[in-house]
Length: 251
Image 1 (tube, rainbow, N blue to C red):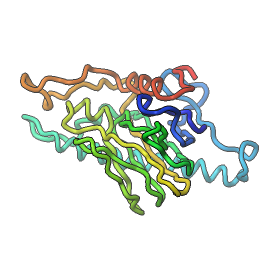
Image 2: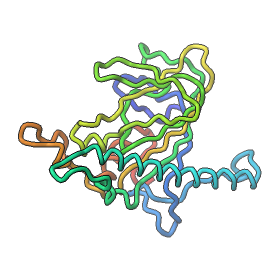
Image 3: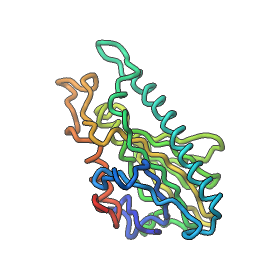
Image 4: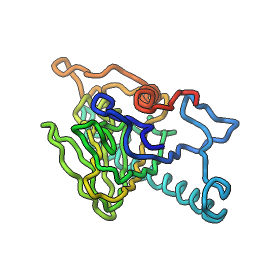
């Protein structure tokens, strides 16, 4: 629902002017575990929406195939990033593989209203935040609004580009690399006269129990670890609890 998520509670007077449909890893009722964010998805049916049964099946099939391809792309990206992290033993493209044997993944189908943002009044289409996991693949429509923050604190527009993904580095990769790779701070500002906007972020997270702690190659006595170790799942639960009005780990 609109306003359910408040990603920048310090600067926002109300929730984001967007609504979303969430699709997680498909787990049947017998094996569901809400405390680990695992359970069956709520798929559309003819009784719950205006689509026919055939279109509902096509929607689910499309989303599941998209998830599979997105996982493949993200694992390739993770391995390219791993190659860049050299150590005394050289580079290892499979450095992170053990942490992604059962990755947590989430597709969000986001719909932004045409309401004009007013940052000076605390009204944002999407408040400033970083993504919580490893990587995000973001697919957008042709409408403007996405901005990223530079290291100098300047907000820069990210123009939509047909046929391309925006790739965000997330908090867990920043933790693993001790800040060598920065989690991308971003927001959405709906300009005056804009149309409704749609985007599809795909969040790629490590295994729920993966321990995220600074890599040996990214710290030393002169550059100690900046972040305490934490499991990927606990970090996700902490962040969801702080930004979603309706979230509890058992819901």
